[in-house]
Structure formats: structure tokens, C-alpha cells
Image (cartoon, rainbow, N blue to C red; front, side, top):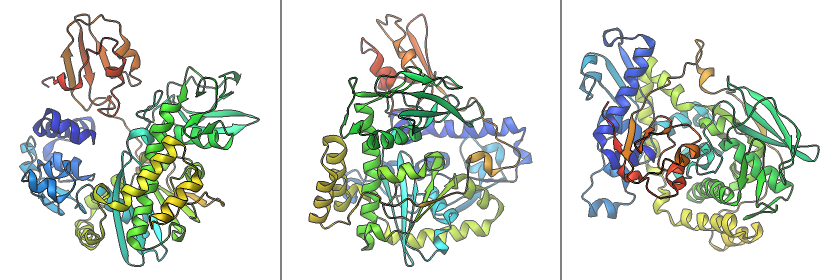
Length: 497
């Protein structure tokens, strides 16, 4: 959604240029010149692939045929394609280089969702199974017999550590997990190499540290948020929608905390995903308990403690096996790069599931299920009452998990596991957003609020934001932190490259 928001606010041409320039940065880092590259394969959601190819995105910004008709919007063709990369604006030097693009299913369910279907192996399984890519737009697919039902839930950014006060994307020196230990909470903190290290042992009620950790933490990832909720519920420190401490927050170490506002934001994300699972089951005419196997993908799905995710509702309650399968989109891009036949196989799969796509934005079943979830997470409606309301509305039931599924971690460290040459991170891929703030007092609170050090406040009152470090429109912590309310998102301008 941030990609869409950026393109609508600052222009699709600008967004396209950023994507192309990121690719150019990658090639330059590898020392690859246009003449040395024979083939390029890409994978991603419909917005990402459309921005790269220069395909209009108006049809992705609106849900429902009536709105599209009102604004005279035509659905774009996003079938599989093989084309000359030199046809892409800004890539004329790559004339003669072959570009392979996998297909979208429909609207917001794209090649990344197909990657989830194919790389999970669920297409070849006879079990009733569900696959979910845990992220801001949670793509999911349910397989029953030979029919695949797809959908995408706007879960929001909490599972990626955003819209949470101390939240952050996964990076070195952040809390990634929490466990109950010896009557207290024990954190896990990521090292500079993204390895899990023992964090502090602390009292979440008053923040007292019983044992110092090996690394000072600077934030909490989405997986850490899920772990906090699970442990908070089990210790009864969390009783929705409240946190039963004097501070109305769980206090960690290194000045980190998780409060009731964060709880609501995370609950909305969890609720959207569980409502999506219920909606797909309703479309398939099965009960949630009929789902035997679950596949978890995406960064959150890879690093999340699956048992904890199961307990808070991110997995169907009766699943027997859970597979954590990593970055399926990147893995599929590699498949397409190596085999054109694979590309056309994907087109066949996309065509076969288009008839069973469920648009959650217009689905009455999703609306009813999600309203239930909001009542549970935001108002503290008893879980038993939520079950009653689902039954009353004729929707598949959910329940509290009573058994632990068997967890299979197919991929441990996600992207690094996909190659033998190791992982190299590009330090700069975006552009700069800037504005001159009239009346700025130079208090610096906008800089302090940014957990990614994406914003710089200059002495003349100019702010400069790095788009590749910024969490985007879902965050805006810098804007909320400005005591004079002078920093305006819409007033930011893209600095020429």
C-alpha cells in the first residue's frame, strides 16, 4: 500500500524511476553492465510489477466494479509475459535483454501469491491446506480438493513492526522474540549478523532488569510483538483490550515498551488475517477445523515463532502441521529466470484460480468476521461471544487451540538461505523527500522519533527523508512527534536525483 500511496501522491513516473534506479544500483554493485546481462526475471505483487513495467495502477487503487465504472477505470492485463527489457522506460541500454514477468491472479493477488502456492508444494498435496504471506497485505490461499481459493487481507503494518511505538522492521539490535522464564520475561535480540542472541531477563510490570542481555536493543520487530501478546495473555497481564499494569504497558529493557495502543494495532492485523481465513473457509464450504496444514511465508512468517502465532490466532486453530517456507517470491523469480517453461506453467495456474478469488474488500463474509475481530481486540468482547456471533451469522467457527502443531522450519534465515554466495545489502536504493518547515524550532523531536534514522533536520528548518529507510505512510512517527504540527506528509517533495 505504501508503493501505491507513493505513486498516487508523487506520480507513477517518479515511483517507476525509483524502481528502475534500485535495479541499476543492484547491477552496479555486482559490476554487471547492460551488455553482460542476457535475462532478467522479476516477482512481486501487482503494484510493484506494474510500477516497474509502467502499467497504470488506477484499477489497483479501487475495489469493486461500481467505483471502477464511476471513474472510468479499466482493468489492466497482467498476464505472464516475455519482453525486451529495453522497452521499459529508463532501461534503453538493456535492449536485447530478455525480461520475464510472472502473472497476477486478480487485482491485489499477484505473482507473489502464485509464488506462495507453487513453492509451498500445496498444489501437489491432497490435504486441505492454507498458505499465508504475513505482511501488510496478507495474501492467502486455501486448497480444498482441486480448487484453490485466494484472497488478500489488508492487515496493516503491525506484523512488520510498524504503527507500534517502539516497533521496527527486522534489523540488527532489535527484540525479535519473548519467552516466559523463571517468573519473568526473557527477550531475544538480533545480532549484527541477524543471529538470535540472549537478551535481558526482566519484569514486564515495572521494567526491573534481573539479568542484563548481551546486546542493547533499539526496537521491537513484528515477531517480538506477537510473542509479547502471547506471553502477556498467558500470564494474564493482557486482558483485551487492556494491559493490567500500572503503566498500562509491558515494560521491556533499554527504554522499550508495548502499550495498549500497540495492542490494538497488532490486534487489528491478527484479526484481519483470521477473518481472511474464515472468509476463505466460508467460500469453500468447510469449517476452519478442517484445515490440516498451514504454510507461512514472508519475513514475518519465516522468523515468527509458529507456536506463538498459533496461540494468538494467526494460524487456523486445529492445524496439525505448519511449514515456514521463507521468501517464496524471490525463490520463484529464480525459477522463472532459469526456465521459461516455468513462466507459462504459472500462467496456467493463475488462470485456474481466477474463478475462485475472493475480494475481501467487497465480501459480506469478511466484513462480518472482521467486525467480530475488532470487537474482540478493541472492545474486549469475550472469545465465547465472538464464537456465538460467528455461528449466528452462519460463518465458520474459530476456537482456542488445544494442541500444538508440528512445526517444520524449511528456511531458517530466509534470503541468505537462497544462495551460496552469501547476502549483500544495498545501503542506498531510494530517493530523498524534502520540505522547508516555516517556523521550525529545531527541537529535533522528528529525528528522535524515527527508529530507522531516515530523517535529517537541517539548521535552516529543512527536513530530508530517505525513502529507502522510511517506513512510509503507515508510520509517520516524525509527523506525529512535531510539537508545532508543522511537518506535513503531503508537502514533502521528491528531490531530483
